[in-house]
Image (cartoon, rainbow, N blue to C red):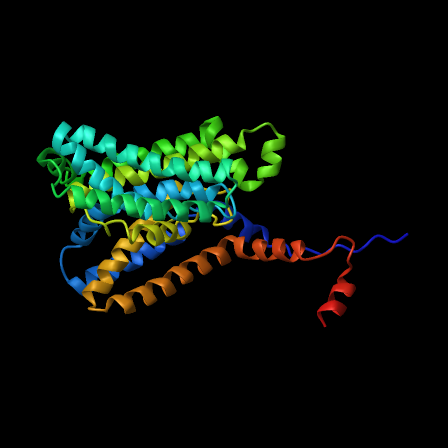
Length: 351
């Protein structure tokens, strides 16, 4: 009895494989960031540090939202939190409403609590009602949007002066918020690498069935991850309420931007490989790119088109360099191949 021939997997030269191992997943987003930074300096003609300093005042808020999105995406295919944008907007109003009466600390706590409450709705829909995550978080987004409008009608106050001073504070010329969010990012790296929860998040994203059979509480891990995403989006909204001002559209751009930043930074959209450092390089790339396009005087529509093309370019280059694109194609071909089907049979079928 002759066994079915197997498909030969193309091997790479050892030097190529060694480069792929040494080159970090966030390396190409860093290259893109440096290229855009040089372009901004060339167009503006100002101090080299000025565009970077300006970017660091905006990046921390995007990084906060993107870290939560990164953790959710790491859970595997189908996991994405589309409610983060509306959570940001709702949390901004919750922060100023409570902060005006009880102080800035209570205001930020209320913003985090609002994000947690919204995320809890998604968790119940995902784990109890077994609704697909993207649908569950979309439904949550609609609920949160309505709540935001009610909060906007009931509250017209601004953020406390103490909180405004906090978000505008600098340490050695670097925004304090950037320093604190960087510390948070380091904490996330440690959690993902050294704790049972972090390892469970990665294992769930790599193979949820195998992780469950190994005794990992995948359902609990999923619920906690979505709660973390909601809390971080809420915190970002509370801080943005003081940095800019509360608005029903404050978080509109954060949904697509957070997903783009996560993917550009090297996190696998298929799950199983989070890259916290890449969230920073991806966010810097995106913020600097927006500044460059504004300097060039491009319209909003043209900016969105160019951003999309550049994002695709960065992702394609990264996939080609790391081999993730080819491995994804091989997995797709394998999933479409019936067990025991020979190469000749497949060719006859395709032809």
